[in-house]
Image (tube, rainbow, N blue to C red; front, side, top):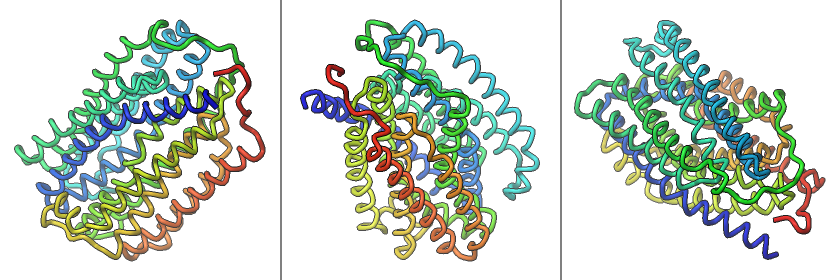
Length: 430
């Protein structure tokens, strides 16, 4: 019981460390969104949001990279293999650097095609997006190392620097220079470069044997290449459920309607982002307990409760004062839609549950949920194709998809606990 109380206390401390930095970074990003909403014309705003949504999908491998590096790092730290970790750091940097350059070149080459699909007047926003994709793909290497070593102070500084870099460059180019979507997209490489610099400062100071707990002698099973693919699918599904609806709106609706949907989606996603810091803290804790024979379900349940508190508070604020929320973010450019806003908030809250529970499955090495999640994403895409006449249609498909995903991953988590596929704590282990 003492060990479990210590685990809970450490989890709470880590969340308390990371969340303030996360709030700073998120606030800076939100201010940048506010600047875009206020200074860009509706058509330009819809274009910028659509490209940023597409960029988020294209750099989904970045989230995969951070997750896999964090998971492997947490394993090595638990086993005391710090020399191996330092060697792996250099390998991660070289390989991900090559991937980043290749991705940037590929997107830049496809700019003319993407310009036609997204109905853009200029290819320059897509060229900037290509640079952003490359830098954003490399940034998670340092993030993953900091997350895996549970250095949430260093990770916090990295997250805050990312947000502040975004508002410093993007805010100026949009508000002062009126560069439109191109100026808005310059914020992506600026934020990534800020995060890269701060992240590697933290890594170089952190990955030292004296800064980590004593090693434990416990068996550990690293992911195999097929499991890397399954983790990629899991994270891609989360990204798809988060961003595809905005791309659908940009393609099928008029510019004004697409801008209204982008505004509605932005407000709803505040609920999702409110719970993501807790999932970030959860992953290395799950890996640590899975490696050392600890109680991963207790850690998951505690994190889920914390996330529920944060998400509920955010959702209550938005739904209680929708006009104030819209006026604060968009001034008088967009009007709160009291009928549709609950659907956007519900979808974001359900997706937050999916994201946190996915960290349980990935951290515990039980990634069989990839099949079910892939089927749900495909069904959601087909749903968009069948029902996209109105904004309510698109939101209804989104809510249905996220609800199915949330129910599925939680049911799988219950099955893991019930079937004792995750070993219970062993006596004498921390």
